[in-house]
Image 1 (cartoon, rainbow over the protein chains, first blue to last red):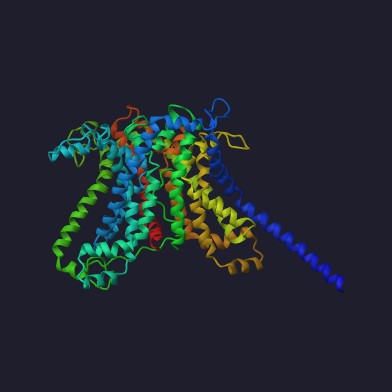
Image 2: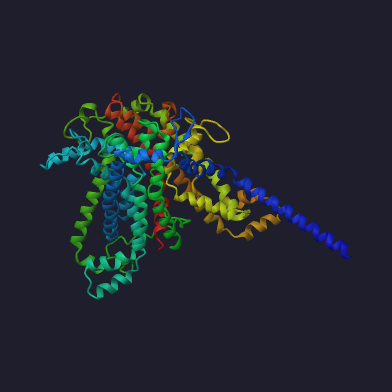
Length: 304
Length: 322
């Protein structure tokens, strides 16, 4: 008897193991295609990018190792510093417009008891446009001759501007398009967060004699701190990768507006055809953005 | 691979919350509705000021956000002479709607439009198919190393797409192991679109909430894993599938830098890339070009107006917590 039960137990253990292997094979069959895409277009390029940054590669001859040469060339290139300076300038300006402005727009819209659906659709409409359409449309507005903006300025008797064609106003022109096209997202997220602010807080503050500004400063602002931090990080990550605006409005060789992404594009695909140099620049960008992304992910996870 | 992604919903928002109920129509109608910065009493007391600010905001916002689109759509029907006038006309004085038809054929918008639709729809189907497979397996089949795989997938959220631009381009030119060149093929857009950790995360979070009991019951009735996915998981996941679908299609339609790199052949280009290329040549009359821009925007505007609840709700859901 004992022998038989032991045999059966061994049998069922083997069966269970076989089942488990089968289940696992099935699970991996379900995942195979998706994971292959991740391997080819996410995990492998990450490793390849780092390796490439230590290689000389121009797609013509097989890549070979050059050590830190790419980084040395990079740090010796004056455009490298210009690109970082411009990118930081763009990010800073975009924060002023694209991070602070939506906050006040959201606070204002939240007070209205009419047209709230219309306002939401309105501010988000440009976000839905393909970015290239926004940029090309604004190119017509910025035209120094008959562009809409200069016509407007002329109409009210203000001095005209060269917009994207003058080094003084080029960057701010790029930030304006970018803000117009993107501010809807942040505004709607602020609006949703504002709906979550308990009304009793305002009630209590008002009873204590707090003015509108004081209520904004001591009730609204602290209640929105978390979402503001999240949006700040998202905004920094997004604007440091700015490409379309300078690419289309001012070109890839304009030192006034060349950004990190434009320089990577230039190194790899236009002037130099030097993939190693572009990869080295990408690695540096990745380190900077990766730090912000990690912070963002950590924040949103512990925020649950 | 979206390089110009708008701020996405912070992760942790699996489902879009329904929009908050519409505010009271009359100012301070029922004062029990949501209390905001300014009390209903104050609003009623300063009715005039309220309507003044409201009217002003309406005007300014409509001018800033809607007028550019209006200008784009109406400029296309103006005559080239009227378009070039130094003082622009608000309502077109000349009426040439045939410019749209001319642009559709002359600028070959038809070709690029079809290309873009093909890429977007194909990318949508493939992404959905592959991402659901990964999400379902990680959520319900729980394979060995599942946690590690999920970690590796989520870690890619930290990779800004632009930092991978150069190595990903090299991968497309010569796919490792298989040694095929994907340049100018739809696969160069479709396969990278699958590698979207955000979509997998959203799908997995949703599938996690479906009780295992349902699947066990189906299993006892003899349903295999595929059947369980098809007949139970997918029908229950319809809301999240809708949101993810919109994300994918909108991202594919709006993408610019990646298609610019991997589709150098004009015949294969998307509308965005083709418009950028055509804007640098002076062969296209500006009114026709405006028609091109309008045509490129139209599908997104239509998608937005139809699905605005899901889109705005999906955005809002992310900011609710915290």
